[in-house]
Picture 1 (cartoon, helix red, strand yellow):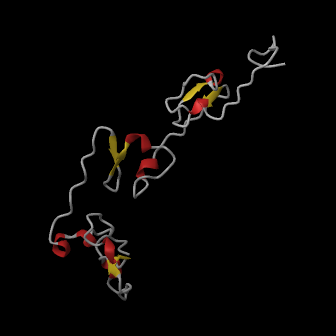
Picture 2 (cartoon, one colour):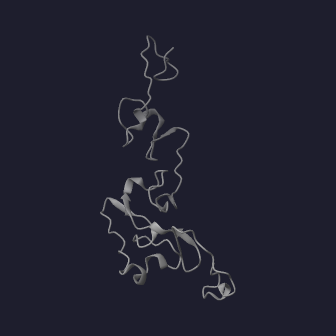
Picture 3 (tube, one colour):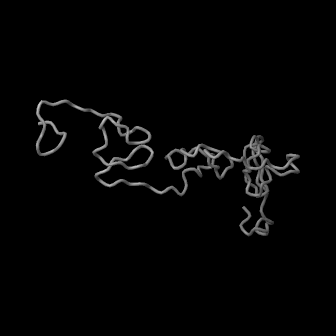
Length: 154
């Protein structure tokens, strides 16, 4: 690997050999041959997408629509997929630098990360934008209600 940036630390090294279906990047790293000229730079030196090799310049990154966000790897994903706990970008950049939202003990955390007051969970009204506050609710009818704790059956 070119640690110096000018290749001087690589001059005395024996060339590494890649498998028959692999491509050797300029820094001797091997990548699958199918990754060459696929408009996605995989080699640190960009040799897998060079105009000399591919006969064209790499496609410029996609322009995302207002409802999308662009991944570090170039593709566009829906904005709501950013920081949702699931890596949707090839490089996982949609899950990088996400602030961890925590709710207070008296709050319910919606699936989308927003917090609502705990008393609004299972009240037959959709308070979370995603409706998760009304999932798996077990509302019981009772003959007498507690005078101490509202909505508690005795």
